[in-house]
Amino acid sequence: MSYNYNSTWFPDLGALYHVTADQNNIRQLGSFEGPDQIYRGNGHGLHISSSSSSYFQSPIKSNVSLSLHNLLHVPCITKNLISVSRFAKDNSVFFEFHCDFCLVKSQATKEVLLQGTVGPDGLYQFPSLH
Image (cartoon, rainbow, N blue to C red; front, top):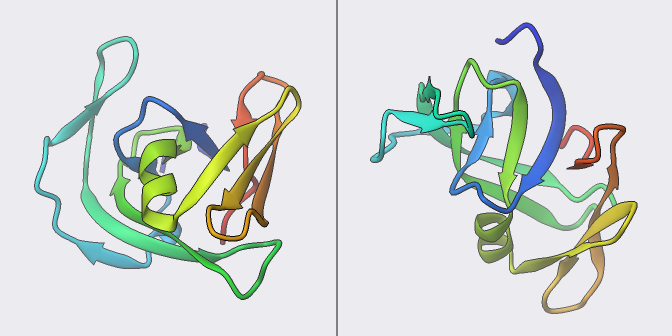
C-alpha cells in the first residue's frame, strides 16, 4: 500500500470506477475486463491489480447495505475514490453537494444514507466505509 495512503473516501464526478489501494476494502474478488491502468490528471498511469465488489452498511441507516461494484484495486493510488455516477446508479441514490457537506440520499425514500464533509483540502469526503 502506498506510503501516503488515506482511508477516507472521496466522491469523484469524473471517475468511471471506484478505486482503492487497501485490500481490506475488497470483499469479493472478480476479474476485470478493461484497461490495465488508470490515468491520473497528469497523464501518469497506475497499474490495476484486480477488480472486485464491496459492500458496507449505511452508518446512518444500519438496515441499508450499499455496494461498490467495479471497485479497482490500484496499489499505488493514495486516495479511495467513489465514482459518483456508478455509485448513484448501483445503489439507487443521489448526491447533494452543499458548501461544507455532502449527502447521499435514497431515490425512493429521500432518506439520508451517508453524510460527508469538506476537508481542509477543499475536497468532499466520507470517513472510512468499513
